[in-house]
Image (cartoon, rainbow, N blue to C red):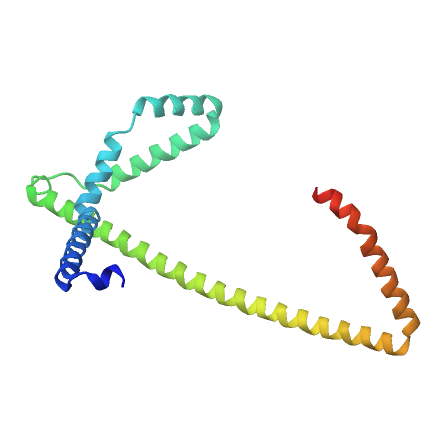
Length: 193
């Protein structure tokens, strides 16, 4: 009799309830971690923990070693900043209001949700492509196996025809193959040991 059969139904139900509660807590934690607000906080915390001095030293070294690409990148960045300043309207009291901050947060949340949906769509597309590639691979393997089977049948038929039409030649080939195999056995034993 197994352990589950010896346990009382109440014990099994209690274990299932504990397992459900643990799974619910895990799912709640995952859901909390994937909320746009928490993702934004985690991103800000990650940026705050960056050791900027290490990156600045690396950037300075990179600039010294490759001045032309660094100058082009700097000019491009300066152009982007200048273009953004020209396109940006003047700040008013209305834009500095708490409602504006709420709109910014809502926009950020919307963009994060859009990014999450985009990642989900990309994962679905990748899954579909992988399934298609697997199916095509299986079809190709089946085709190769069929081709090998056909070639083996033709070779077998050819050997049978040669043995029937030219028995001395078939016998000579068989003896040659046997000698080659017998001669290679000591060589293989030395290689293996």
